[in-house]
Image (cartoon, rainbow, N blue to C red; front, side, top):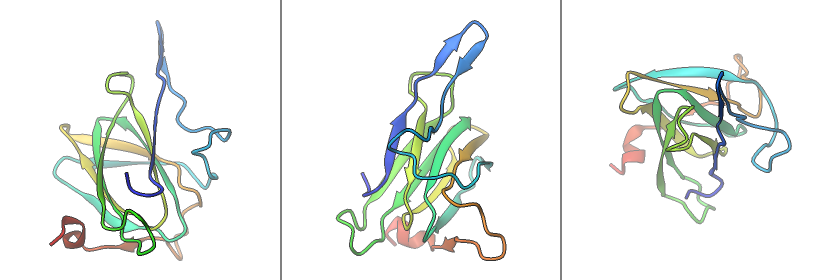
Length: 148
């Protein structure tokens, strides 16, 4: 696993009305801080990425469909420098495979796409709010992630 990347499996609590799944709590070790919450969608065959953040940590939860997230560690001082990691995020309510929260630390490059479905929707809880005038988003060429 890439240094700083964390994955948390969810407990889905079904009942006769549907289900409940807590995504991120302030009293969990995986939580850093709250900036905002948003949902993003990605269609099949399209990659959203490749980019990274210098000051932002992301917390991804797939809430519809299935998403494939690919991560790359470019950090010179990291013991996992050059590592590529793939994480498949499934939406609830199915407990098998369990839905996951994926924590993407700052400086880790990532991209994601819908995986085996028309569209995947991801809820993200980034640590700061988005700054439209000065966004913390830095593009990265896909060839570097692919090793070419």
